[in-house]
Image 1 (cartoon, rainbow, N blue to C red):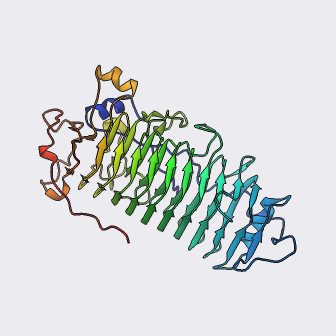
Image 2: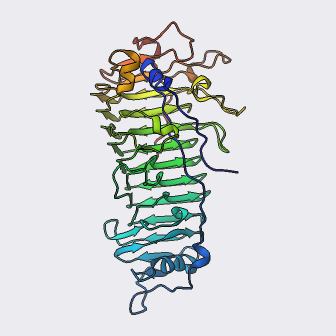
Image 3: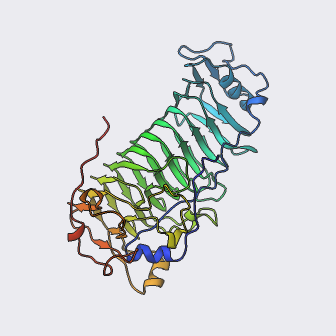
Length: 432
């Protein structure tokens, strides 16, 4: 059983569909799973402590920079008791293999994100920098950098927190960078707070197949996708800055995964701007075909609310919403998968200066400019009776331009008349 996301290649029609009103987008996972490596079994029996053998108050294990950082920190992860604290001193730690942490209740605490640096530039094995499988884990006050795979992956964890930390790559827009910065998957109660992720070749801050999610006061830039919530339930994405990525914030539901029916993602009070960098994803993945200049992208999720955001300077489109269209993605091959986005409400956002310089491919296909802040694909489930609760709505977005597409050939063509989509849905609760 794999936890990786199902992806399909995107075709040239994707770009046309975005222009015509479907705003299709996706990102491809090239992560190979847990990548267990050989780290836990090869800790070398190293002990951790200060040069004088004393452990600072509040720490159960204390690790300083040494001649064998790999053995010292992995040894601390093995020796720390349940609900213990592993403290890391200031300095640049070097690793050659994946680290693993499976003890429950552990806090891993650095001396500060600018002071404690975990560098994986010479990593030779393992699919991640750090793999977490223990519940009630907190990672804080440190930086993870230069992992060839994902920065930190949390797998089937209950209560996982990332606080006041960074994940980054020194190389700018490089194929050698890892696919994801933070990668909690199939987790319950995820908190990502005051973090910065820079340089992921897929998504910087990603949460997948999880529930009870809060991503707040964080920053994602220099990634292909800044922040992504996928096949997840009850997520709040608030007060973040997503800028200078290829695409800013993605909310997706995809077929073929263990956990389905993504819904109730609330994206509010964010600053989403200038997501126009060239795409540097690995060739052959769906994300590799994402044109630069996309702000918020919604695919097949239900009850998504996007409100009170500033969305500006995204040169292809400010926001796009689309169904999972088999003619573009291929058959879902998942009888339980609902391809339609339903019950979406886009309201009270400040859109400006979007769609001013659409991707050259789009201009070639359409033969003319595109200039729409909000693009809906226009697909509805023909097997369901009309129900206002399923409508995708816009309201109170100022002077934002709007295009309603006909991606499923159900309408009489594309339209810029917002009247039929001007409505409201019940507001999602906002976490305290």
